[in-house]
Image (cartoon, rainbow, N blue to C red; front, side, top):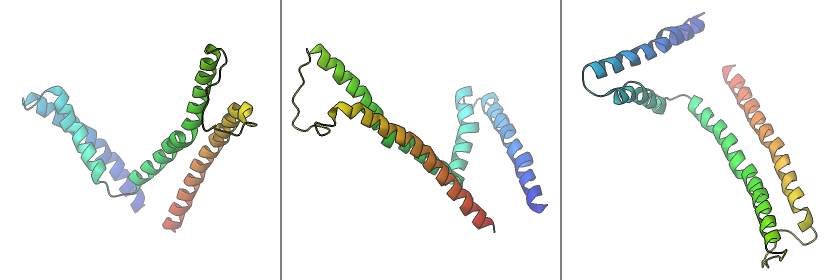
Length: 154
């Protein structure tokens, strides 16, 4: 009961009171002539929330950064190179067709000659595999965090 009451107090009294004080502060800044409406919004809402967010000592921010890092880095580091390769293959194919089928000579080929005809399928397969593995990794991270939270509560 004590933990429930503390949570309700935090959400209902403190949490719902903050937006009201933000509106009152903005009103006083504008009507007092201290600043215009756009700056009053910044000083009454963005600065207090931004300061509190940076000074927060809990682990919610760390979890948010970890999850966003998994999603963004997974997409940028693993899926984007394959997608960019597919787009560039299409552009290279169109360029070769425009140049009467004459292939430019490169000192280093991306794959052995026997695999070059299958280059597009290899990249598509890699991207398909990563499209399955990335959400799986995200789910495993969530399960690991839940297990750690459950161990911490016991």
